[in-house]
Length: 259
Image (cartoon, rainbow, N blue to C red; front, side, top):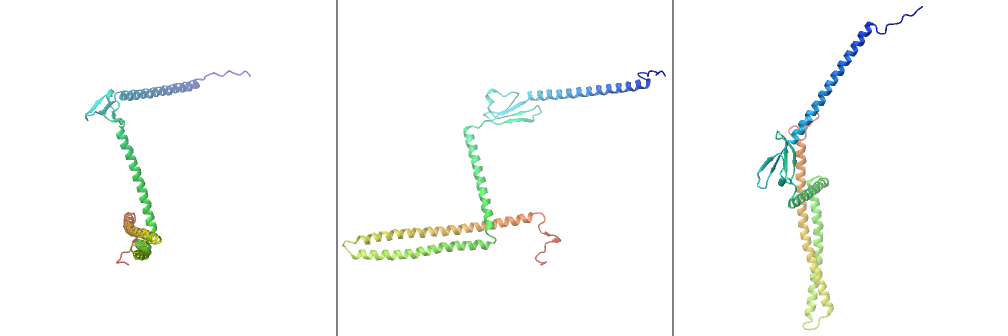
């Protein structure tokens, strides 16, 4: 049987292919149009930005305090602080003037002052924490104060007894020395008297130092006591301002009249 050759493009197939080709061409044309629009938009924006940057206005103040505006910084004002504005007067960039030696020293001094203040604040916080951790009640501070003063008082009492002993021996030596009248005083008496008077002077200095120490300790504990009160009051105030203060799981905490 003889095979009939098939038609290369039947009418229906040719019509379908034609539709596909026509639609594909339309999509490509639309894509090219959109891409061209995007590129043109980007170029327009870039040109506008360049135009605005080129058209910036500079603002600065001269030695007399007069404000100047110009599209270019003059040579004599290049090292001055100035602001750069766009066409709408919006700040684009601000350049600070270089510091003079005096201003640099003042800035360094201010930085050092801030560092010192921060360090002192850290030390204060550390002491406050230690104070709150050391005493649970105000009475504990009074007890520590009394103990410290009792220790100093015991040292002063020992110094008083020792001083009395030295004074007695000094009186005895002076009387022995006077007993010789115009005669020759044995060197041993003079040496001992000199030693006793030296010890007596040291003991009197120790007594004066212990009195100052007692005053310092009393003042120290008075300051700590007041600081402890302030910290506790601050804690109470913070607790009262905290969310949920004064409420319990099942309502308001009982008041004095409810207890």
